[in-house]
Image 1 (cartoon, one colour):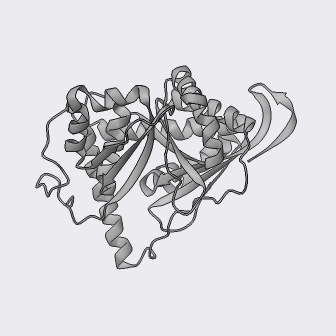
Image 2 (tube, one colour; image 1 turned 135 degrees about the horizontal axis):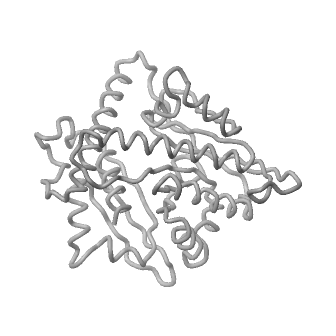
Length: 307
């Protein structure tokens, strides 16, 4: 993961690192920019290598390699770009509350323990020091030994958070062989199946924006898992999947709410089934399973983060 080059730079050790990000097609498009201008500018200004995985899969891997300071600069620029996208999306909306920027990093599962720390102490320290939300997925990504680490907050909080994460992973190299996560590729772009999937993705994206707004206004909604005329294309025929999160015990209460009011609200707004495992002796974390369509999972995940 890293090659230490002797000597210290201003930001501590002068090390070459590689970090991997998991992004949706729309996010990748935003990073690449018109005729590739945005990514070119990011590469030039940060001095980091930024590579985007080929293929027509809905998810892509963005690999950032370079000296630590270059990596922090690249992350700062990516987070700022997403912040601009959120602001632009909100211009014509009635939402008053600003959703946070969210990035998903991918790390070997063997390093995630160090990131959580004993009794969740490290992840708690990172949250408190940086003001960013950090969540380590409970499950490995499909057909790999890697886990997703989701960080959300302001661009400044995210950049600080990445600094902390880098110092942790440099101190604890991965153990054993790592099977990297590779997103599943889809049929070629000209293929009708692909075009249909692209349309579904665009629908999901616009629905998520609407849902952000509704969630922010706390408007009670009928469950979106059922067919709902205000959200065309969002129906029970969308394939369901599941996602697992590991959430510190301290936060479970605020997610469940008084007599389950908050968790019920999250279930209702997202249309997802949410199961919270009972506490296991001595474990600082609780397993939360979200089951539903990709959109309902995203919404539920976002609302849980907000809590």
